[in-house]
Length: 266
Image 1 (cartoon, helix red, strand yellow):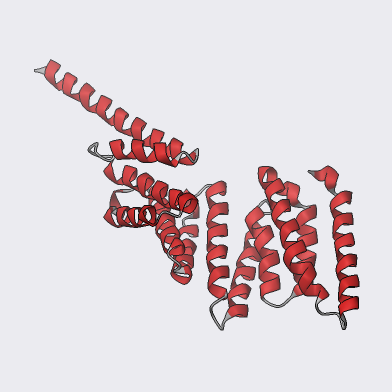
Image 2 (cartoon, rainbow, N blue to C red; image 1 turned 90 degrees about the horizontal axis):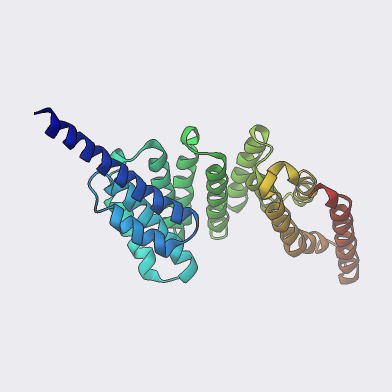
């Protein structure tokens, strides 16, 4: 009598291990941005009893990410449909946050920026189960959604003030946040404070090494924003075209000088 029971237990443990292995492999492929392979592996995993919801979540997110690369509307529809099939109660706390991220991403990609921002905001609240990298992505998604929303609403400045306050709070608790350093600049400019935006851009460049591996990306984003947005806008406040051109040239020289002085910090 004991041998069959032991054999059954061993079989169940082996099956559980296989389930976890297949789901983990799908997640690994997703994190490697190999979305085609992640989709294939997750399809296999979701047919295994006990792994369906976790595998479906990976599958849905992979379709959404593939849509961002291919712009194939079928991928977006597939990802949205799969998310609606998931029972959140059967997910781990971490996967429930990832499910919220998937919902927000789906709404964002569908042009529903306001609702997407609200869901990203809720997902950020799950900080106890979100690591630093995931939190950075969430902050960036949230601010990007509100930034897009602000372009089509009369409450533009109020929206950017909301982003500004959030990024100030983030930086007060985590000086390493590259997303907060960048969006502080964007939000200050969007709220009408160009001088604060300029100062935040310069300080963001100088303390970028705090962001670790994200420092180079932060500096690239700041450099593009300063040259394409901040300098032209600040220069337009000059009284004449000639003065505007001189102001822009001076600001570009100041910006390049700062970058060179702090180049050793990279």
